Image 1 (spheres, rainbow, N blue to C red):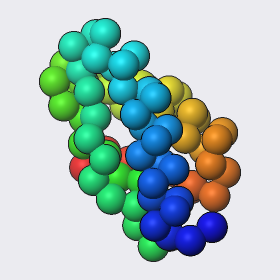
Image 2 (image 1 turned 135 degrees about the vertical axis):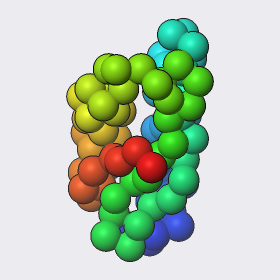
Image 3 (image 1 turned 90 degrees about the vertical axis):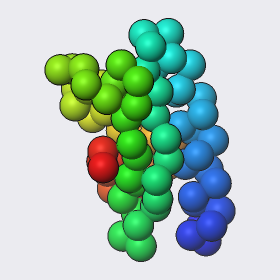
Length: 78
């Protein structure tokens, strides 16, 4: 899959996850898809300072993205 196409698919998946974060007063913003298929996001709102943000990111967001787009290596917060 071409880099631009993969980036667009990542954004689509993140947009599907965002309402769950928004229910708790948080959100995330897509920052970039690196050349080695690492997704960089910025956690904002309640997610920006929540002590459980790393768990949400890795066990929620990352698992959902990798499940739908196996070529993604990880999702990291910046």
